[in-house]
Length: 414
Image 1 (spheres, one colour):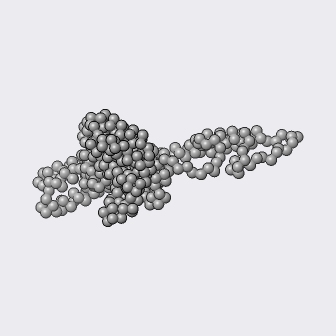
Image 2 (cartoon, rainbow, N blue to C red):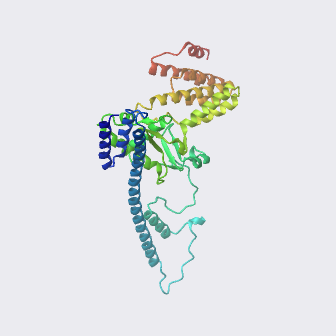
């Protein structure tokens, strides 16, 4: 690089440095590195590399400063709210004590009933007091309870083993409804739609770092470059803070050489990755003649497929390829399972997997034939005939086709 270009580069970087625009400095250096030969000027090349790394660190520390400021303000507000709750509770106790003070000359009160924690109902006054306390605390429960913890969407134990919730810092579901758990707690506050969409994209392309320009084209195609970059930086910042959940040393998103990537080194459980791993294990076992073990792997994979990949993103093009690829894998293993149980004359299981497959692909003609055979084997000839009619109607409506000769021959034999 010529000397006057070096001087211009240094001047531009100095101006950006004055404005603390560290990521822009890193971008300038990234472009400059492609224009110089390190062998011609190794000192300058090394200075650029060191400067770029420092600027990336500075950008991350700026994010951390902003997060700490927001955390301080949030903690201050929370402390003030809790202090007000304590004062309200003390006032409530004072009111209760005044109203219940025994007047001189009155008969002593009856022994108070035990708390519901011991299985006996409270008197109405105590119950109302408890409701008021719960209201002050912002809770919906109408009375104290020792009810066992319910397994809900707030608890990933519904589909994740205890080992998973303990061993993985993030548990992500992409098959069906998109859900993310951080330390076994469902994340609901995403601080912006783009942050959530950005995570989906990085999960989809988790094996390859994604260039910044690609993210700009995907999520901000109509915005001017400066505005798009600002929006991307804000989305990345929001995503990092959402996933950190207060742990400043937790680094879920990496940025290197103008590319973003999901940091798989932090320990991530991903349903679509586990789905493929069990499918591949089943294929290896089946190839070695260990069919029963293969079926066990296929069943685990089938249970993980709770819906199509990123199925809620109906109007986005970027998930389509992965969505179709995983769906075809699922259709294949569901077909293998239904065929396996049909051969074993376990017609109930075969029907179950046939119906699951048709729910994903109503035009899968081979599965319609499988169901016809299952119903016939169970002595339900009317259901077999009805299944043929369903196949006929669906193929005509969806594809403008008629059933194949094999399907028609099976129907005629029935």
